[in-house]
Image (cartoon, rainbow, N blue to C red; front, side):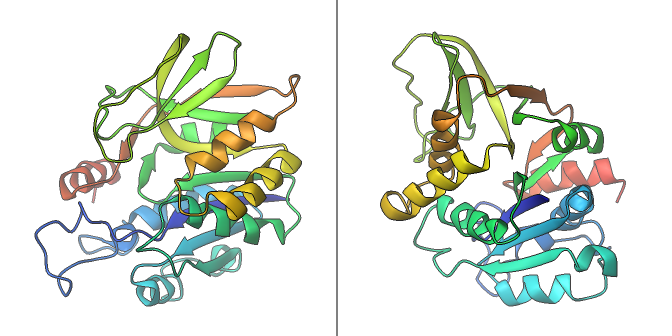
Length: 255
């Protein structure tokens, strides 16, 4: 059983900057007209390779429900989708959405879980390589690393991987030696379900208001030494934070 998780609960503050609440939109279902040209639609289409798809929402949750039930998505794909509501979308960080998504995913008794943040654009071929890889996958992109926006991971001298992120979008500090540092493409594949379950449970008990990287790092720290971890480059990638980001993605969709 392969389960995909898409988290889409946030308020999209940078995307809606300068707009009133009445003018603001749910970023993942925003379009220029064609309702097929949304971040969520394209991610759902990519995740059709999964047996089940868990979508975690929060902000403007009713609009998310309405979009999924509007007929834009094919019936076969819609039947795979389970919606989960994150009531803490305003007061908790990104980790709680992933926590809820993993909890729901485990109800399907998965063998593997793919997780992608809902505001990520990735090309189809690269995404397919992540889904079909028979191992834990960490993804990266080729964009320059700037501390105010990048999620990075680096390989330590023992060969293990460590994530780093400046939650206040300030300076990023790494105070240990490393072999390489990469810009995360914010797509992961988890293959060791016992390690993921233990990390998620610990997050729920201790770190529930922290970022999703706590769960990812907890998973990596629990992997057996012989567990294979594969790095995959996402050839065409954008993290959609602003309207300008969305417009550049729209050009790739030819919309």
